[in-house]
Image 1 (cartoon, rainbow, N blue to C red):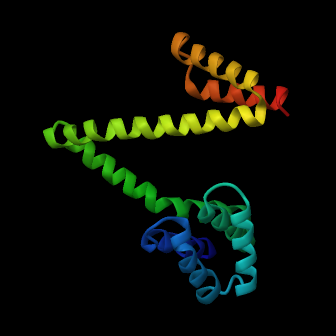
Image 2: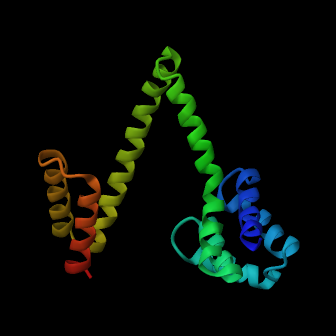
Length: 176
């Protein structure tokens, strides 16, 4: 029963908290402090401060921590799943809709308009990553990783997951 309560405590704010993690923080506080009494206001503010200090989405970090405090590892898993479940459900519904209407001229036109915007956003993100990477790791290391990644992906057709794992391994060994 406690796992169901953890699920509801994070699923409901995920549905009604339009705007992502920061928008759902007051709703999560209402659930875990006022409704279920798992944390005091002081403890919740400490969890919030810890969540803000760590990298990544705040809602999932808070759900994992609070779920773990309430019900151990199963509670953490349920809390994290409940936090991402609303987005996951919406994405499945939207992808189902797009798949159903994939031959529609309007949907084709929409995807043709969206693709360039995504390409520009990915390009900006890549430039941002590269500009900060050479500051942290050095220009030569950054160039090596870029060239090797390009050759592996484009020329040898290696799966991107393996390239990412290889880059992480390279960084762990040579850049630690």
